Length: 154
Image (cartoon, rainbow, N blue to C red; front, side, top):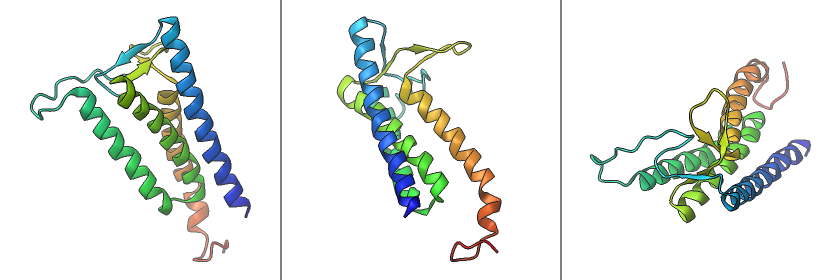
């Protein structure tokens, strides 16, 4: 039962982050400090998809949908610690998908030091969640390898 509560907390944290990201982007747009990144993801400016016959926004929309869909489908096979990060990855991905659907690109407004491109809260959460997922997969791997098929430690 405690595991379900823990997963619910991360799910609701993901919902909160999605709302906070959308709100911060709206404020940044009203203040005139946001730009719409129509050409990339996570601040990358990759624009030439002429060989595929796709507009950059449609290409990144398709890529984002595939990634979010893959994470949602595969999360059922992940360990609980990994699913926690998965909820946050999905929330960040959905927030940027909302931007692509309604604004034709992702609204970026945060200039990070030492990085030459702009981001938003969803991008930062996405990167942090991927790092967290990799770390939890590595750190908890030995713990799960020492359990039997019922989940009890040997």
